[in-house]
Image (cartoon, rainbow, N blue to C red; front, side, top):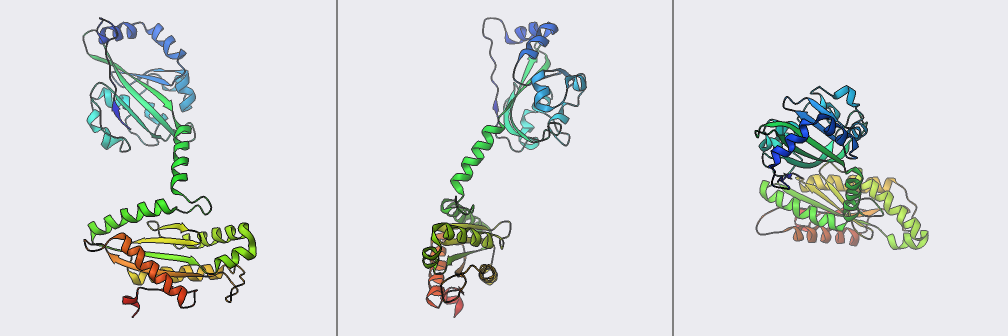
Length: 335
């Protein structure tokens, strides 16, 4: 997240004059920076490190004695050379931020920059999510003399946010995508298929005779059965496919840019993999099996994603009606 850092004088004294007074008293500035609990470093006009406070040492794992007077500060944050926010302010390159730091949002003005992003932190040993602010310091004549960059470690907050987002999109039992995530992904993939004139396939997978299995093995046994089937289905997916728990004992698989023939092949692999689990069942098949309905559509103005779901559901119903433990295609394709 990138935004402009605003600056104004707190009194009648011009801001650049007040900053010059502070920067001119090196001892005072050094003591002030060292007393701060937030990580701070300062670059001079030549992009050499003037100040690297104790909190910055603790965050980066790089001692001040190693970095002061050098232009190697980037090594504390990145594996490969790239400018920090302070460098961009020094170089008056605020408009280049989106190209250099693609995870940021809109570029700010020439007065300063703020962003939140992941940093490699090679010396600290693990990536950290930091909020960084870079502020220019001007001398009495209005010339840029230094840039101060402050840092805040927001890793714990970011990880908590990620965990909450996962809770909102993942099924708590199986770890698969949940119904909400399925709906969002299906509509996004439909839109993409429409733009690119590509096929979009869908599989509806239902566990056969699951109620009988649940009654015989209890809810814990039923839950374990669903988890094992979920892993079996997920193991057949490509990187851009999505498998979701659609509801109860039913799963849905989105197969972007996949023909009906290809979808049928995936469906048969899933059917065989679940059967190979050999989960004991009281059903006539003796083992837990699945029935699968497949459907494919070329997205267009005369159809929609809901119709694709309805077609796959109808195929699944036929697979159940024909005896279970099988795949079924739309009638027009199966004929």
